[in-house]
Image (cartoon, rainbow, N blue to C red; front, top):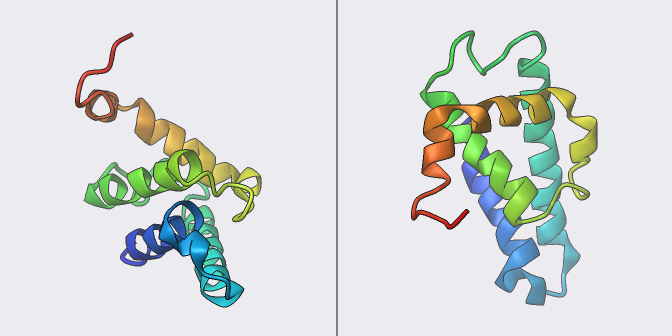
Length: 112
């Protein structure tokens, strides 16, 4: 859980922000590889579980926004084989369907 935020954030920086200007591909690849590794750990952990633990916990609250950012903001799905992560995809959708998550995603309020 502790590596997801820093690693996904760094990958996002290389994909979407100033990191795009760096010619050396090695730093970007480092974060792609680490994001893939973390996603595979998460994929395995979620096998047979709805959430990281058996119930929804603070770990889920810390993790799922980074998954959403990776997929929707950074648009990095193709880089990390997102389509192969069935457990992670289902997990993210369960988390995003929670009433508090739906409310949070509408702060500030967005027009319908």
